[in-house]
Length: 147
Ligand code: ZN
Picture (cartoon, protein in one colour):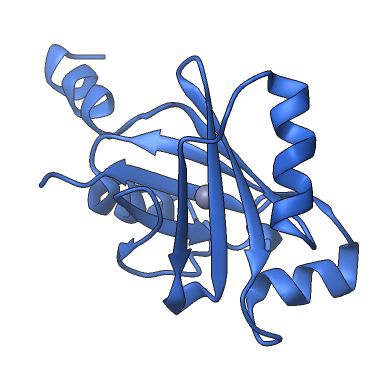
C-alpha cells in the first residue's frame, strides 16, 4: 500500500460506533428505566419530523444510546415495532466524510436507503444502508455537521 492510498483509506474510514438506536413504544417510560440503568440524565431530546421519530440521547463515554419513539403510525419506527417489537433498531458509525463513504460503499455493492446524506438528529448528516445488504442489521452512517 502506498502512502497515498493509506491516506485515502484514512480519510474515508468508519471511525467508531457513534451510537446504538433502540426502538421503544413509550419514550417517557423508557427514559426512566435508562436513567436508573446508567445513573445519569439524557442530554438531549429531539423530534425528527421527516423520519416520524422522537429521539432521546444518553452519552456514555464517546458512545451514545439513542432511544426512538414513533410520532405517527407511518413512521419507520412504528413499522419496526409492529414487526419486531422493542429492541435494537440500528447501529450508527461515525465517518469523516459521509459523501465519500456512500460512494465507497456503493462500489462495494451495499444497498443504500439514502443515496445522499440527509439531516438527522443530534446535528448529524446521516444515511442508512439497507439491512438486506448488511446481514439483517440496519446500519447508519453519520457525520458531525459543520456549523
Ligand atoms: Zn441513529
